[in-house]
Image 1 (cartoon, rainbow, N blue to C red):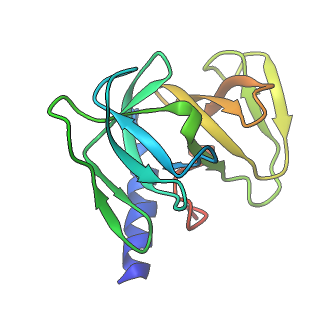
Image 2: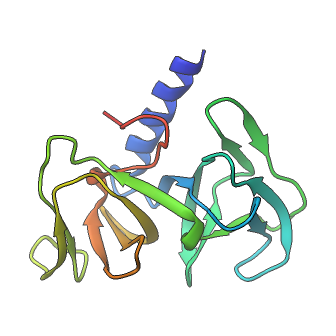
Length: 169
């Protein structure tokens, strides 16, 4: 059952970043405290919490000033599924507690660019797999920030994986 779930999540992640989709599969990555806050609006009231001891996989959309709206009120940890409660206006989570891994498993050089275009100047290039924080989405491009906060720019969505348990191959 778990293997089928992982395959399904991988497929959903791939589909969510394909064909100009404006939602992303991501996972929580929060080292501050015991819980990740989920709010009823950007900068809104905390309505529920996700334990930080797990990497919760969620789908997000509609980025607004650093906040992502969750597509629904559920999350998956690989072992369990969770349901958030407490909001009638949706569930929002800040980009600073979200992550996506890169899919350069063969050592490909990836580029973070100044704007969402293959011809835009390169802000940062790397060959090893890293995790990035998703900030925005525009067509086939995702605006990301490195975990150390040194680099912010755009990367093609096809090179990102929002599944914390598999490598999205």
